Image (cartoon, rainbow, N blue to C red; front, side):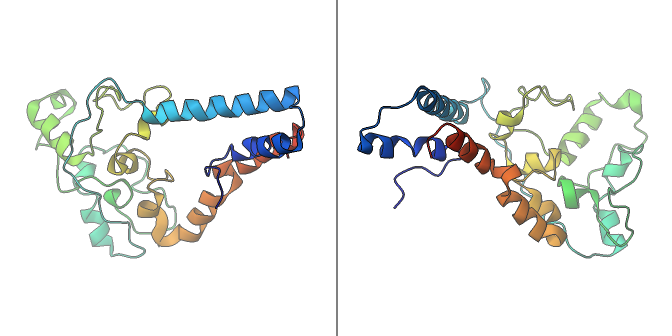
Length: 219
């Protein structure tokens, strides 16, 4: 069994045991590399263990069904009906230029397309109680609304660690292409590409740390 934890920085630490057993004094570059590795690991642990100042809100909505590979235009329209009563100025109803790809809004983002804007509601009514209730019923809401500056739609700066503490439903609503949820949104057609991307160096950064280990004489 490998005594080292599975971590992208493991390669930087593997050199410590062989050097100690051989009675070799660590080089300055070796010490700096291991120190950097430990600092990064401890930093990641701190981020993972940390939590926003606010207490998370318990949400009861569930993950929307995964996007299908095929469906009728009528079925896709049902999954966009309520969304389009508010989101009326979009350039297109889908990012797919190929008309053979038939998807509704909730296929990718989740949410509840059965909820529509109150009849006759205009821009001036978007702060009304009825409109806000409809929006919050249709959207997937964050666990930490204060941290997200809700109801602002602008992402807060450096929100990646905040996303790690959010529900998968909200991540999908915000970004259907996020690796944590992309199989629900895109897996029906693109699963082989998704799985290859998750294992790629662009995702794991494995070669980055191995290269640093080699260049510092650790490996």
